[in-house]
Figure 1 (cartoon, rainbow, N blue to C red):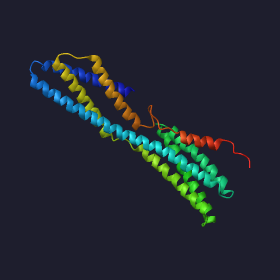
Figure 2: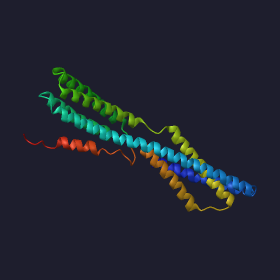
Figure 3: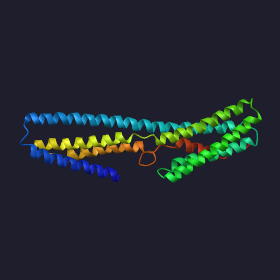
Length: 255
């Protein structure tokens, strides 16, 4: 919010500076010059609109990928738990308990937010449990290498491990900083030209200009918020993982 307010203030100052510069040049620029400025304004504002749409699409696609991976991971863990129930004891209980702890580790991974230390601990715990899960699954398969059940279990465990790696990569996959920097730069240039054009005309509507700045900053803030899933207002929902946690915590019917 502080960065957004600072950037909005910068745009307002840029418009004011452009207005004063335009008013100073108004007496020296004829109608042809004003038409040229208007053409440049339209071109730069069109470029800004293109960059906003392009950046929004990039951020939204990455957000949707993170959202889909949460559902895929919770489904993979749930499938692994169901297939573990088909194993004989003690492998059944051991794998079920490990997968139960793994769900907690994945929830903690999301709950860490922007805290890098907590995020690293949750990721390390998940990777440690993955190694233990794979070892227990391998041991179960070694006891009966021809069983379809253990083969399906190992496939599910492999999916769980792969999806952890995919979620880590998706979390790190951000809109390039160069794109955001270019977007901010073009927004500043656009506001400067808007102010300059108003100065050439000799008058300005401050309310309209302020609303323009708010619109620019709001869209850019939304793009950045989409692209930062570990902070801000827009977070990747974890309902599927939380539902799995609730299902595992519910009392099991007696047999």
